[in-house]
Length: 185
Image (cartoon, rainbow, N blue to C red; front, side, top):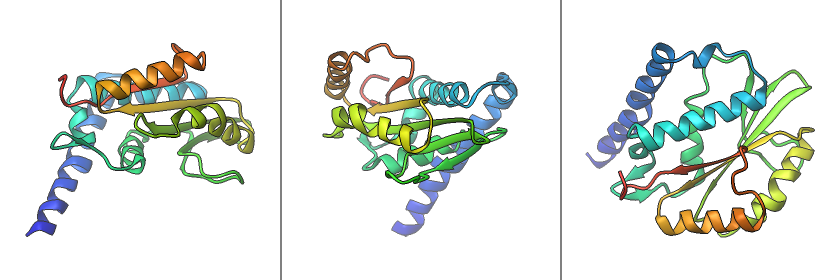
């Protein structure tokens, strides 16, 4: 009974909600008809995911009884569901020699961009922003990437903003902060 309940919860969250998301994208926007670069598409999808989480009760997808997901992988999987109806080749966790980046969007060898997800609670967040993403860019022969940081508490939000300010990245368009808190909705 417990297992069946977990399966039903997963089906509801990962299938039913995503079907609504895709239908909304198809009917209410021209989201799937944009002629753009891989970077623009990565950024637009990250921004849409942000709006869905923050403004359309999508935070419920990233929270279970007020608790955030236990790993980045579940957030990545949820984000992966917005990747449909695209001409770009989307790969999750490709490893081109220096470790797996979360997503790579490409159109041939010359047009490629990366998306890296981090939870704000990650103790290595500063180091990852400083070093990890540039390593992935080099390994994938691109200089275009989007960094998505998900936070579940006001304290984590403040910590992220402090780190970004110290690194001179506050306000950088390539960094998408997602407020997945359950206490401010």
